[in-house]
Length: 386
Image (cartoon, rainbow, N blue to C red; front, side, top):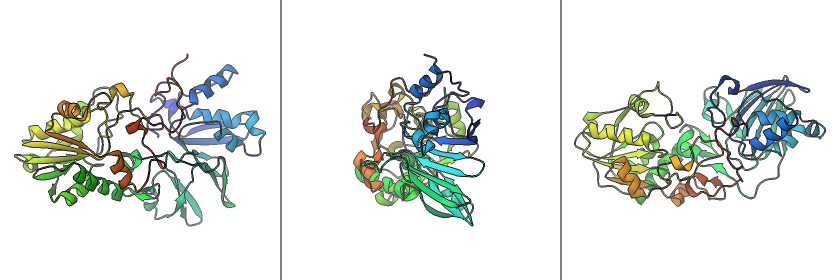
């Protein structure tokens, strides 16, 4: 199931969406956000179309079934050209599997070979489980069909002059044993830790990670700084991600991670985490280290300050709820109650991914959005009736 970035978490929104239309039965799974979905929905509803969900993904189905697109040589390509925003999409019919990525390549999608069959996944670590051979990524603006005839590729959009690959996949979302956008996630995060140690050194005794997405960066920080890496938290693997949970998450945070008193007591501790979103989670975790007896806390973040909302597939709230949006670094430090705070720079982030701002979307840090976003396009946009 895709976690909800558009639409509430209700049963109608569970993916894949399965529908039957004039061309037969099709199942649709979509990762990303369509930034013009509300306009598409309003246009179809004005013509009498009925929507069964409040997710932006249903827009694909109505575009595919539109007689105007069905009359073209490539109905799916025609449908995909009408949407804006981010998508890695899979469609399954009775005789084929179809994969496509948006024209700017926001979200990852990879192809693997397994015997005489094919696999498609957002992360390459899924292929390792089956010992499948990773072949390549689906290119931005490409449609790939898999059937009894094998793999057939075509483009629905020309190659872009600039890409907008989501750099947050490397910072947080992807597993470290995956390759995302052709790069090892673990190596990128390790390099981020090394760069953090150079940009924001700390006079401390030990380095600890916020598990799990802070682990690789903490290793890099420790190696580059010469400080000892230790295990300051034990993670409860039965609790999910907290930054996407609604309401008060402080109790969940305390259950998710437990500080190891014997490691941190009386120590000057460098704490390495992947990001700070609202700040609620970070403050609770750091407070638990204080309670466990840490003498000093020096927080190092392997992402720049998140000051702008995301409209392309990550459930960041609007900027008014982002702790760094209207605060200086020192004000965030005071809010979190740490002795020092350092974020990796945007340039340092680009160094770690061996890329440029023409290859990656950094809008949540810089406010430089690569696509126009409809007014009032947020998580609840498809719930509103006017």
